[in-house]
Image 1 (cartoon, rainbow, N blue to C red):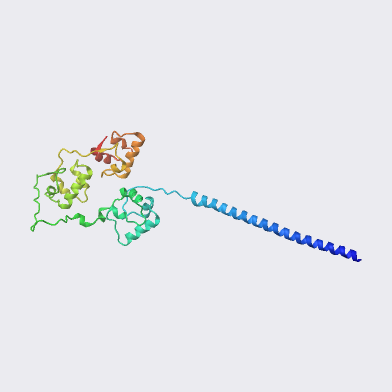
Image 2 (cartoon, rainbow, N blue to C red):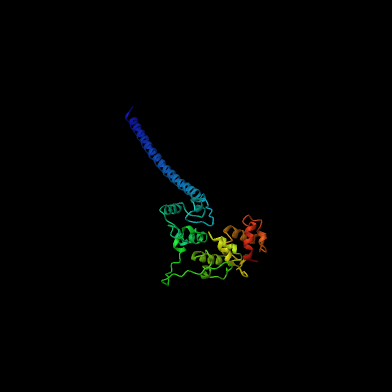
Amino acid sequence: MNRNDRRIAIVAIFVILIALVLLFFTDCDDATTIGKSGAKDSISNYYSNDRSSYSNDSYGALPQRHIEEFPFDPNTADSVQLQRLGLQKWQIRNIYKYRARGGVYKKKEDFARLYGLTIKDYRRLEPYIQISDDYKPAATLVDDRPSQRDTLRYPVKLNEGEFVVLNTADTTQLKKVPGIGSYYAKEIVRHGKRLGGYVSVNQLDEIDNFPSSAKKYFVISNPRPQRLAINRLTLQELRRHPYINYYQAKAIIDYRRLRGNIHSLQELRLSKDFPPEAIARLEPYIEY
């Protein structure tokens, strides 16, 4: 090979090397660009899918809690009842811990101190809180007013054949009845106010442990009980009466909504909440 041929060969090799170097760097740039673009697309798809999954799974699939409203005693209600009322599990645990330490809800307002209970939830639950008399302070049974005399004077009791008028007698007159002291005298007046007046002496049996031997000293004179406007009162107003519980009040409201005004309690006799005896004792207190 002469010198010219060698020069041509060297130039050709040099050109080939340059071409190979350029080709190598071009492929690397393309790969880098594609890699970055693919990574961006992958990241974008990841967050897009993550947002979609989070939106669908975290929000769309949240279970709807069904909250009920019914009478309950916070001193005895179990966890199932408390959950049905809409309380959170941690609130229920706090109630159980409070009761386990000997804590007692003595009045409705005590329940408002439950940690985490909002004013809105308390106002919703307050009408349904029913504290049993067993958990109220025993001091409420005693008339703790100081005596104005050094010598105690006991009321003179009635003789056989003497009576007091049940709807008009005050506690002083009631304590003249054999077997009736301060506690039962106050309970007689209190129960009469809740009823709207007595229509039968036998209603005294609705007072816990009332001495039946005392009933013969009472008479009912021209009873005029306060009547409930059954077609106008709200559920809460209806259930304030001792003879109407929550379920009966709801049955009345539902009947009015579906069929219109009630003209006789007999219209409710098909409801399981209104057996014949419930209708009979409520009838004197209803106006249409």
